[in-house]
Image (cartoon, rainbow, N blue to C red):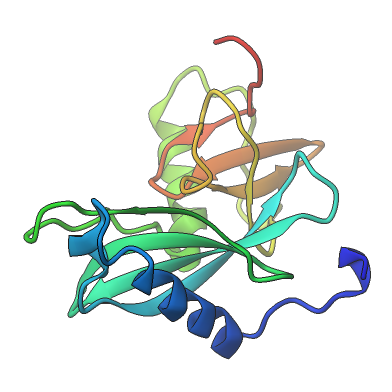
Length: 172
């Protein structure tokens, strides 16, 4: 079946796949990250370098600490990469919530005198899902971007708060 006719996985199905995936790391270097951890949140990401390609980043928590993340294909549920802590007291940095992304965009763009694009409140669009492609600004699919449309341009805010006027591919 073509991806374009497939439905995306439901939250319940995605979390079930994530729970099953956690078991495969019980004897790996990520053992600490997945022991006693449960899937808590999923982030939908669109691969903008591939047609109709989407994945979820599923985060795992132990109590209030985020300890691991796994990539799950949003259509077929195939589990991709995993990342996580390797020390028991470790914690992954939290992603910037979508509700804070617009404020961070204005804060970060106002910090730099070099910023080339004029930001006007109320005239900026936010793509409904995160985006990612391999680029100088993010070599890992675990660091996707909020994509904003500003006039005829796109602006990218990585989930850790780093702002970029463009995504650059090729040699740095």
